Length: 405
Image (tube, rainbow, N blue to C red):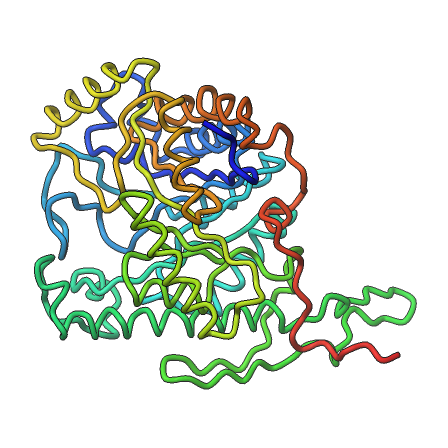
């Protein structure tokens, strides 16, 4: 198969012991260490050894649930409980050197002011490798943790009803405003606002701190931030999208959208829809990456991968299903698929290791060399920031006065 016209971008999505609910029971899993910094550091440094662009770290405001769409399922045979993704990222970032670190944040019940400060801080401690994955929730049990709003009960099968679609669309609109507030707060300090002149006693130039004065249906935020502008100017914003409401959020607010098409034809249609929304949002001139999400079971023999998946399904008590396509096979077969999907308009992929201890090393030590042999993946890190790795320029500050001739 011919090589891709341009090198691919690769990320991995980290979630506990892996994306299969029985992953924690594998001999390579470390269930006793899931709540330790060392466990997460080991995963991210392995991803960095594979020259991956970034890792995302899953998070939520409720316990994991594999058999209930609306709340905790009460199961005790699967991993339950997690650490805060932003804090994991802040712990891991100083111990890595090149890879981007992108925690998941839930916009629905958190404040953009707090989040802007947290991700700006992450950008400082990582020296320019921070991002975020914005997520929404409309689950009653998660709203009950905060007591400030409620959502009506609905089941998975209600998702396509007009009432639920309206709830979801409104949550995505709120997330777009959330991101806009975060971005304005990142810009609320100009790059040279800090003078730090001991002789004159001036630490900051107050004229280079700006009120953002955001007024919207969901937020009213004055600003400025209390954290100076991050090293990247604007850390990376990403979002997972499955339908038009999500595609619109990606087009309006994100630098990367993760999508879950099943094949090349559907991939092409999804990318076209996102590009149309991007144009409608006035962002046609901006670089917006679209990554494909895949769950991966990787072994050197396809029969081994299939047998491993079947054995894990037996431990879990039911076949594993996912919103994303599930790939079971060899690294070479996966490389073929990635190049096929890239030809349909994707610029990269976010791979979800079914078993972190097995499939992450298979990605870094088997898939990456295969893609390198095809000229489809980097051999060295070519930039020092996450924006640089993704070919995104450092943006100008929206509040800074334009230079005069």
